[in-house]
Structure formats: structure tokens, C-alpha cells
Image 1: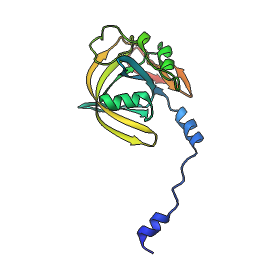
Image 2: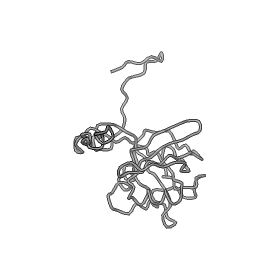
Image 3: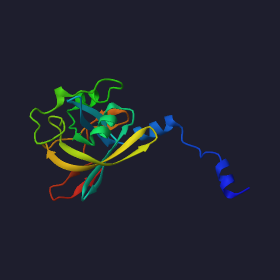
Image 4: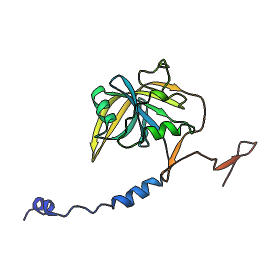
Length: 186
């Protein structure tokens, strides 16, 4: 028997149980964004925590969306998407964009008049990025979209909305700055 034959008969490597994996990932605190696009000429937004900066030069980000979602299909078709980084007071927008199987049209949450973005931007977001898809990868039941950031709109300074342990949360300082610029770690 050849090595190739032996390898093809080798059992699949064991995978972590899905429930244990989901519990472990729920313990990872992450910021919350609404990935936006246009569907039938209307603003649409899907709440996502699988978002990351890839590169500052050129500015590139990634988002991971369920491949069967309306958002993933629209972004694949249009080859562009927006990302609104949510402020801690925007729980209603985050919840709206995360309802399983529900329509995610976001007219009531978007800025009127475009505010310098080509894609829907959530009013009051900490920041909004307009992105062009430069690459996508299908991984299991998700599509990872890599987006080149074409424009950035900064909102007012504020606290980010955070998601951890299956709940929306706000940040609290882990240290107290001293007057001389040093800090006390807790």
C-alpha cells in the first residue's frame, strides 16, 4: 500500500464539539459593527462581530458573513459594502441587524443625505468605512470578504459597543491614569 493510499484512508482529525467551541468564542470580547449594503435600493445592515483590520497600507479590512445570508449575496453581487462601528448607545441597531431570519432594512438607523459615503452609514456610529471587495473566501458555511477601504468617515468620539458572553456590554477602564501620565494597573 502506498503512502497516498494510507493517507486517504486515515480518519478525519477530531474536531472540537460545536457547543464547546461556541462557548469558548462567546468569552472573546469584540467590538460590534453593522455591515451595510443596498438591497432593492434600500439600506440593509447585518450585525457582525467577525470584523478585523488586515492592513493600514493599503487600508484593508475583513468581515465574515454567513454565505446564505442576504448580505453576503448582495455584497458578492455588488462587490462593495460599508462598515459602521457602533457606539455603546446603539444597541437597538445592533439587535435589529442580528435578528435571525428577519428583514434587516435599516432606514430608521441610517444618516440622511449620505454624509459623504456611497453605502448606508449608521447615524451616530463611531466611524464608517466604505469598502470595495478585493477578495473573498468560502470557509465552511461563511464567506470572508476582504475589503479595500475607499473612504472613512469619523463620527464623534464615544465609547464602543462591545459583545461578550452573549451580551452587549460597555467598556470600563482597566486602570486609572495618574496625573503624571503613568497608570495603575488593576
